[in-house]
Amino acid sequence: MAKPPIYYTTPIYYVNDRPHIGHAYTSLATDVLARFRRLDGHEVFFLTGTDEHGQKVEKAAQDAGEDPQAFTDRVSQAFRDLTATMGFSNDDFIRTTEPRHKAACVALWKVLAERGEIYLGDYEGWYAVRDEAFYGPDELTERDGVKYAPSGAPVEWVREPSYFFRLGRWLPELLRRYDLPEGDPERIDIQPESRRNEVRAFIQQGLKDFAERPEKLDLSVSRTSFTWGVKVPGDEAHVMYVWLDALTNYITAAGYPDTTAPRWKFWPADVHFVGKDIVRFHTIYWPAFLLAAGLPAPRRVFAHGWWTNEGQKISKSLGNVIDPVALVEEFGLDPVRYFLLREVPFGQDGDFSRKALANRLNGELADALGNLANRTLSLIQRNCEGRLPAQGDPAVGAPLLGGVQALAGQVRERLDRQEFHLALEAIMASVREANGYITQEAPWALKKTDPVRMAAVLRALHDALRAYATLLQPFMPGSMAALLDQLGVPPDARDFAALAMPLPEGTPLPPPAPLFRKIDLAAA
Ligand code: MSP
Image 1 (cartoon, rainbow, N blue to C red):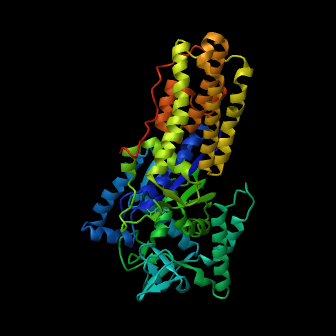
Image 2 (cartoon, rainbow, N blue to C red; image 1 turned 135 degrees about the vertical axis):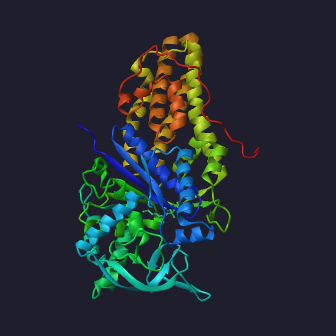
Image 3 (cartoon, rainbow, N blue to C red; image 1 turned 120 degrees about the vertical axis):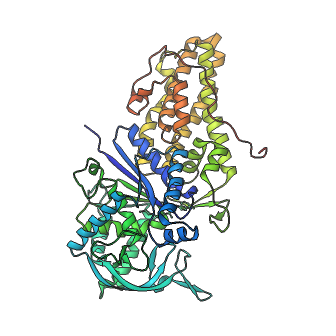
């Protein structure tokens, strides 16, 4: 039976700034899962892109003395370049200034208006340009006469005519969907659990506060105070609220409004990957817009945590922004990819440090995995004429291979829950076992005493390495391709199904070469 198609998205990134580690992180997690599913036989659509409208971007263009379109063209390119630097396998890169996207926004708006979900009123309230979000008076704090949102962004009082989306009426339905059992096609799954509880509590409080006047929960979805955005159909003094515009990208890329487009089969998204700061937009506004338009809501929103840099909050003003390009130059792409998902449980905050990165690279990649491969392959080269030995007496390999055979299933289970660090931990635990196995069996000493056993031991180690390399491909595509080359695994036998089929004995193996270069930070 064909496996279902899968759709994963990253947030689309604001082009007011250069890409940094936080952006690379969200996309990396998405990339790893996309690659994993492809290797597991799914057709995957992986989308990323840039969010180019709104007051914040307009202001950044002004500050740079550039026309907004020229400015966004330039900065968007930096994000596109990042996908190449980081080895992301996205199938599309969407820009909200593209005609296809503006058309989708206009179409969605019209459907919402026709269904009576949007109405014209007046907006008065506290707005933070930096967050492109409105806040209630009770959410604000005041310092030196300036009011601030919980995010730390300053807010200003705005008053203008505005279109409103009837958000309030959808809130009970959202709560119902969050609480549906796993597997229910209407369930909207918010992960981690703590975020789900936060969102539920937030909605419940709103419903309680405004029980008498539910229209208070409606959302202002247009602005007249600036022009850099998608114009509201039929009322061009208004541009659409940038979050309505931005969120729509996820269906634009699937072909909306043409629901007969080939890519529409991917909708609804299986996972929207987001940072914890933009959970509300993705779990409340977005599904409400979709349900109001009669469209299916996303299946899951997963919110990851934030990175600090050597214990400090990352910010431009502190000058401690981590440039992913520089990091990749210093440590190599795959060690950076590995580190980001290995070091911190996905969903929790984490601290970046060069020392921690170097430790993971040196200890786990170079010493544990790299040496295991090198020792095994060098011995096969030297003692087996560079050809893969036959699978010998099963009892010889059993202590190692019993665990290895269960590994694919364990990794899949963990990735089903976006537990990247646990998936890596499981593989690394097995690598450690394999290192114990090689030490204990000492195949280098068996050459003279028991060459049959030696061959069986080396074959078992080769089988284990093949499993590690295959399963680690999504995390470290470049170095695992190199390892699979060294293991003599043909390119068409690198997906997970192929793991069940043993490699033919006698397969010639090329001479091994080191996979990872250790870094000595003290010497740098
Ligand atoms: N444009 C909106 C998203 C619209 S999606 C329809 C946006 N863009 S952003 O460029 O500001 O942020 C994009 C992502 O980067 C967010 O998911 C955010 O959580 C993530 N990160 C920004 N700084 C981060 C860290 N220091 N650490 C981890 N992720 C961080 O929001």
